[in-house]
Image (cartoon, rainbow, N blue to C red; front, side, top):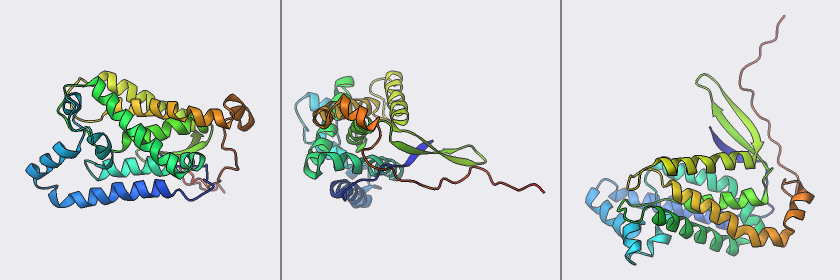
Length: 246
């Protein structure tokens, strides 16, 4: 089960969202020549991935930024870019291009610090844009809680696309990160759950000034939590073929 699109068209071209996607994809492709050289890859990650123990020692602080543009594989990259593509354009539309860029990078930094705080002695390198994108998702939750998001669900022999309110999908995702963080021992590699949860909370907090400027609770009352413009309409495919009876 994963989101494939929302029904929330943006009012302007999301140049920063597209540029961030291009940067992430370009850097990943540029790393392919060293991907088979484990020694070179380890050295690269040491210099540019986020290592909590180094950060706690006051070293490698630049990795709080550089690690946001590194990915561990094709699926890691594809998943992050899908979420950025779905949610980034609308947040950028509300914030403006350059404020959104600053918000995105700061959310990524704060998400990295959340992971460092929960596992300060770890030497496991942390890479990925997911912390920053979690911040975008937190902002989206605050601004458009009832925007429709289409969820693709695969049931072994058939599939279906469900449109659900954004707040349900986003809170389920946040709950999964929180539970995953609690259930994962410190120092274990894999998913940086606390970076995701921390980025999500950071995104909400960093977006509060914008939400208040838009009217705060009054903004929600006026829009009823929906985007303040007509939602996009899609023709959803049926989950099962239909055969007319004679």
